[in-house]
Image (cartoon, rainbow over the protein chains, first blue to last red):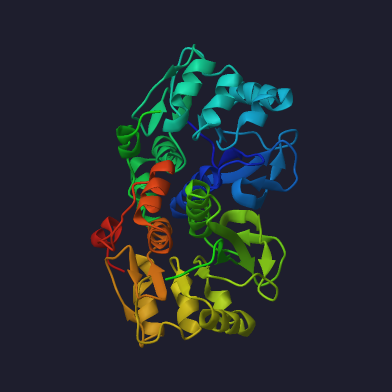
Length: 211
Length: 211
């Protein structure tokens, strides 16, 4: 895959989004960009329906850099999870996800962000995963999506979905590995003192529990 | 230790603070509070020198809930790392950390937040740790602090310091274990799909690298 740098990594957030779902990937791409040679490989930013303060889960207040109506062209779109249900009923958001997925080379979700991608119709016929608690619901709501259990993430080429919350960090490191190199991903994990699950390997949490 | 619930967990942030240093512990305490029985055991919030938008590392914009001159009484203070050097030269911040440490039962740091605690004089004569890259500097700047290597965190009772970035998640889960129960800490890690290093065990990253 050929990219012109820096790559624009847009993370879509909303009210009651799960804090680590977006801050984890943000940390990964920011750190990887700092460590890349030359530096500045990734330009990571937050997107929301409107450019106003987002009240993420547990009252965490964060400012999106752009609204969905006016943002730089994306190389990568990451849609996060949390209390995602209100997003499913927003035609402007779902339409934007569907349109952006067409013009973007790589689209990913963290946790229940997979429901938003599925609602936009982009996961039809693909393997995908989500938080272990929500896999049954994803399967029921979207029978055309093949829900995969016991994986930290599922890579289907253009579309990559991860399990819950911190699995988004593992997936983001995987994306760094794909977009740059395994060496940069490893260096990033080391800098973050994060024990990277560098394969789509079974998640211990997923192994211990059913949904 | 006897607490009246909810416990106020204040996380001190500043411009160029490392994103995961504060969002990781925030996620841990917010999730633990959601899973506690009854719910609402922890009230977690962000504190800054002033109650204005903080531009954390890589341009991540977050709103502190309180300034240091006007905030609820803390049960736990967590001071985070990042580009921490400007904080060391702010008498109002350092004085506030020193005063707050006197009136608070538990004080913790993530990553280079240990430099801020040390500057406030509260780590003198204690064991402490920080990011593997900064351990030599912490030791040189504060010879009265015994810098411990190869640990995810160091628990000295009232004062607990962690290694870099994601080690703050491990430490926060440890604090949940101390303040509530090991069962709640494990449940929180499972909900976050986080593989908790539940002991002050050697960090793989620290083992592989010298400072």
